Each structure stands twice: as C-alpha cells, then as structure tokens.
Image 1 (cartoon, rainbow, N blue to C red):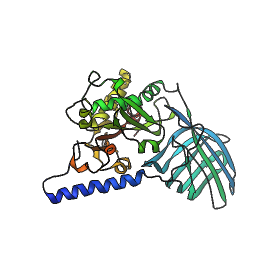
Image 2: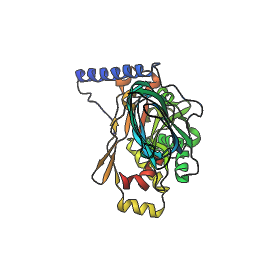
Image 3: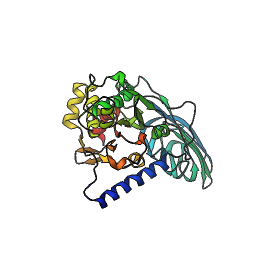
Image 4: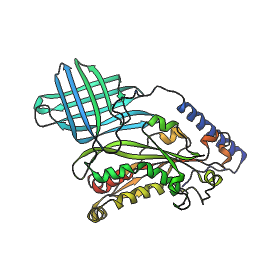
Length: 379
C-alpha cells in the first residue's frame, strides 16, 4: 500500500509540495554531520549470532565486581536516525559468588549523553544498588554494546556490555543470519514482482552496512544496480535456552519501479513492504522442522500483517514506532516504508539520488524464526 496525496486542486497540490520540501529539509538536516556515538574498536560488530558478556564494578558506598556471560533477559537499544536514544531491559548472569545476578538498564538521551539509572541485584553478594545517570557519556558500538561510568549517592558504577561471536551455538540462526544481504538483494525483485530470470542475482550488488550511520547516508542506485541493507541487533532467548544477539529488523533500500524500467527492467508496480514481511516468514518457516511448524500452527501466537506505515522522508522512516502489537492471540506487524516515486511531480525538486527509491524495514528471517519457535509461546 503506497502513500498518496490528493492532487485535485491547486491549493491542495501546493500543500502537498510544501510537505515534501519540508520533509526534505528535515532529511538534509538529518544527513548533515552531527555528533555520533564514538565507535568502540576493536572488536567491532559481530556478524551473525552472538552472545553478550557484562562487567559491573561498584565502588564507594557499595563495593562489587563481576564479569559474566549474559544467560537470560533482554537488553534493547532504540534507534532514531543514526543514533541510539534509549537503552532498556534487564539481563541475568551468574552472581559474583553464587546464584544469579541481574542488571536493569533504563537510559534515554543521545547521541552521547544519557539520563536514567542502572540497578544491580546480586542477593548472594549482598548487592541491591541503583546508580543514577545524569547526562552521563555512554559509548556504543555497532552491536549496540555500551559502556559508561557514573557516580551518584556515594557510589560509582563502571559497566560495560560486549558481544562475542557465537557461531555454531544455533546453526539454523547462523544460516538465516548469513543470508541477510541476500534478503535485501531479493527484495529488489520482490517489490517489483520480478523473478531471477528477469533480474538475476549477478545484476544486483548489495552493501550490508555494519554502521547505522553509514546506512543512513547511503542511497540505492541503478548504475550499477546497488541496494543497501542494515540489520538492527537485539537479544532473545531461544527454544534451546540460549540467550543470544541476532538481527531483529532488516532495513532495505531499493529502487522503485519507474527507475528500474528506465534501467531496462520493466515491472507492474511497487509492491508494499508487507510483501517482505511475508517473505521473511516464509524463509523462516522453510528452516523449521515439521514438528516446529505444527506446534506453531496449533499453539503459537500467529502473525497478522497491517498496512505499511508510510513515511514522508528519511528521518520519519528511521524514527521508532510501535511496529509490533499483541492483539488477542496474535501479533500485528507493521512495516516502515518510504516510497519516493521517480515519476511523481511532487518530488521533482529533490536531488536525483533521493528520487526513485523504495525503503522497507521488516522482521529479519532470523527473528521470524525465533518468533515461530519461541517468542510466539512466551510473549
């Protein structure tokens, strides 16, 4: 489903053009150099499935040290544009002496300074401490791993979360993660209704960005035909009981039907991004065993797709929104979409690289697989 404005009157058309140009002004501002979260290197981003480790150091009124693998819970980073604007969730790990410990993060802000608190609970070690963060510098890397030091109420906390590759722990997720760049390549065809004989793999180059900032600034092209992809990391506990990091959402930047027709690949129309949600679910389902499929069909919270949320410009497309809503025994999914049609006169004032583009953000096949084998039974 594409976003369309009425073109009935000259007055409404003037409003329409004004909205587009205003949106472009916002996009230009968003693409201008801005302070970003300082990258942490090495080790850099982990490709595919990973596992997190947490380090907590408390000093002052409370004294504590623990470095351990994360064994449960979830820690979620919220992106807006090229920056992280929130970090929230609770992770579980082995206690410093025995038992289980946890750390709860509730931070908002960005691009570099954040406010909120981090709470640490380790009953066996006698620790139950919350440390406020007031405009504290938090450094994030491309896996949404973070680190910071904050002091409040006589206690200083130094914390860090790091992701290490966990290849082999979840072989099916490994395989699905390895195909993420192919997903966006194939999305160029899916959105146009073309098959491999009409638009072969070799004709499409895919750039899978490791940096959110690099992806934000990228543009797809027809000469050569290049699409761009970025995978948003998240945490989940699998059916096997492994707490891992994997891609939650995949964002794909492709070219629209008019642009592709000029490049010699005519098609019928621009399909909705919902097409890609269905494709993600199909890929995931094909990786499931018959037993897993039957269990999901009989007992799992089923997926219902909603019409695309149509953005008016890049910053709007990249802005967070509630794209997953639990309704009864279903989860309703809404893809984020941006379609700037090449032949739409409303966009004639935009630079050529901004026109003739079709952007979609949907569940990755790895996350679809996790949902149908675990999330659908625990949400």
